Amino acid sequence: RMAEIRYPIQVVRGVPVIAAPAVLDSRSANVLRTTLLRLAATGHVTVVLDMSATTTCDAAGCAELGRAYQHAAAEGGDLRLVGAAALTHLAGNGVIPRYPTVADAVAETPAVRIVPFGPVDKLRVARSSTARQRPVPLPAG
Image (cartoon, rainbow, N blue to C red; front, side, top):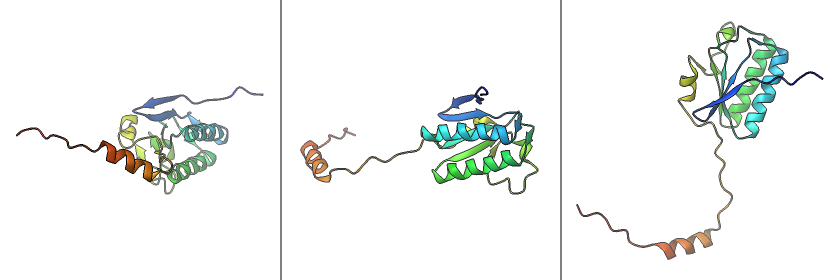
């Protein structure tokens, strides 16, 4: 059994930033998939993939990026690429958001899925809110 490969992840402004390898091929794409799925399982639906050091992205790597983007979008999140020069040859690569720097990529939206609370007991809420209603004094102006 080979040692498990992992990509470095750092959290910047609440957004996980994965440092992609120099070569994104079928083997590294499998590791990327596992990494992205683990992050999604913990509620991180927006992820930045820093491809600044990536020089090659083959068909398997590109296909995995497409699947990761579709999965993130379906969950209400985003996959954001930084420095994705290795992808300039792809047709239609403008679908996945690309940013010049990690700072630009993390500057937009929250990275954690907002999960609504379960149903609220309306009768209980109505009773507790009427018992607490008191006039609030306004400051003299």
